Image (tube, rainbow, N blue to C red; front, side, top):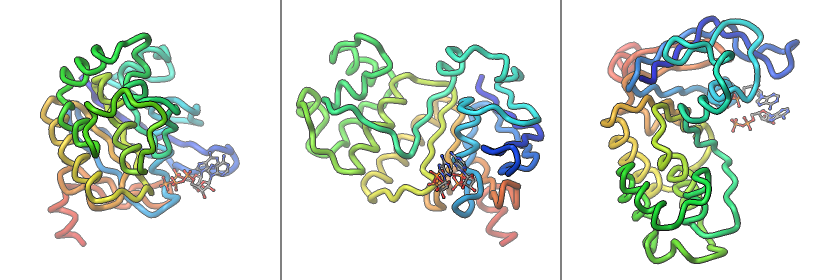
Amino acid sequence: QGEVRFEAVRFGYDPAREILHGLSFTIPAGKTLAIVGPSGAGKSTIARLLFRFYDIQSGRILIDGQDIARVQQDSLRAAIGIVPQDMVLFNDTVGYNIGYGRAGASEAEIEAAARGASIHDFILSLPDGYATRVGERGLKLSGGEKQRVAIARTLVKNPPILVLDEATSALDSRTEEAIQGVLGEIARRRTTIIVAHRLSTVVDADEILMLDAGQIAERGTHQQLLRAG
Ligand code: ADP
Ligand code: ADP
């Protein structure tokens, strides 16, 4: 469960200015695809389309063979976890922020969910310890900490498909390491992962798709691309 397929997808925010020019690719269920390419290539756009933030002009986007245009928004939200690069956190506790999306969840339930999703270590990797700061209101979090809270918020939902949009964000090395670790763990539980990212994290991806001006310039494993390059 979790196959993602783009079939000849054409899209422009303004239909008169096409951004994706008939894009096709398939990610088998449980595999990791990294989308790389220069700023403005369309990486974030792909992430947004998967969540149906916008309708495409032509082509199809399929999840497990189902056209997402025909899927209820609710099921789409259950199937896909997206971590946008500019996720806004609530001015509240870490616990509340992570639990958001699980209506009425208590801190104990959030903790349990985090354990169930086996990301507890990830949350603990928040500086000073998630456990001691979970109930603290009005936290002053660094950019990297915020990013980790945002990721944790998506991960506790345990979605079959995970989309990380980090196309331009500059992560500190600690955060990047924590994310790498948790992604490896998630990959082992057969989640389909799509990362729109700078080059550093893509080495572990099953496939890398190099995007340029809304078209696939190159695709292959890290090894294949190194040989070709
Ligand atoms: P990347 O993530 O690879 O940097 P984007 O997907 O953000 O690229 O952008 C692809 C193109 O779409 C760019 O030309 C950008 O200017 C344009 N674009 C992105 N977001 C919007 C938007 N909300 N409205 C209009 N144009 C947009
Ligand atoms: P990124 O390159 O970090 O993915 P964005 O996707 O936010 O950045 O934006 C990419 C480009 O699209 C930027 O040049 C930005 O100015 C432009 N853009 C973003 N949102 C809009 C919008 N609503 N209307 C027009 N252009 C936009």
